[in-house]
Length: 152
Image (cartoon, rainbow, N blue to C red; front, side, top):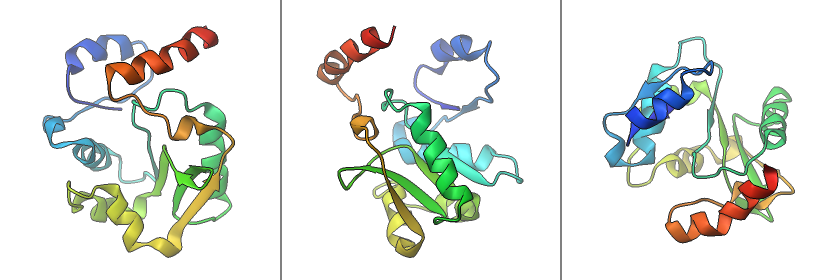
């Protein structure tokens, strides 16, 4: 898990879990810098990268299982969940793109990787809009909060 802003507050919460933490000192440069930090820190034998931004908190394990199943079935080396034909998160990327990810432009981000390899992109249609819903503002948080209460 890649941490940046306020990592000192998050690390203790993750301590009891079996999670490898990577610190991104350049987090202010944007999400791609965190992806690059994680990819760089991954062991050489890593086969796939699951890119799951924390601002998409309602994506459930079934979506991840379906992404992994598509990858195992050889359905492309870039697997993207889609809801009603709109791309969402998390992304599953083959580690063969490790070096290319390191050179991507922060202005474009991972979209650049998808544009370079359209023949390798599998859009996996899912039945939840959670892959699209993110929380970037206090209003987004207020909108999403009731779903956390429902799950508890």
